[in-house]
Image (cartoon, rainbow, N blue to C red):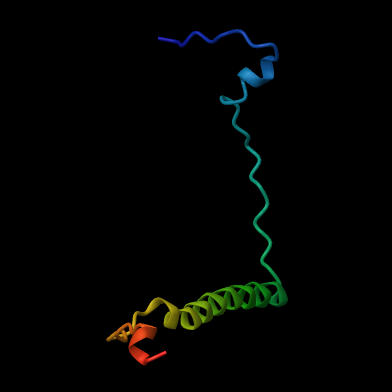
Length: 78
């Protein structure tokens, strides 16, 4: 049973999903040592920044063990 397709203004668009090429794409070019080292360095910098922000922000995220008792100024004799 064949599917009936709607007419489209451009025939090559309708046939685009059935087209198969017999040409294989060229193999991916391997990055140079500098490119690979740059990617690693960028990734390491991002991770180090996130870890540093977490370490610096930890004191503000923690609550004190026993909060000080509130004192009014009237009790100080002022």
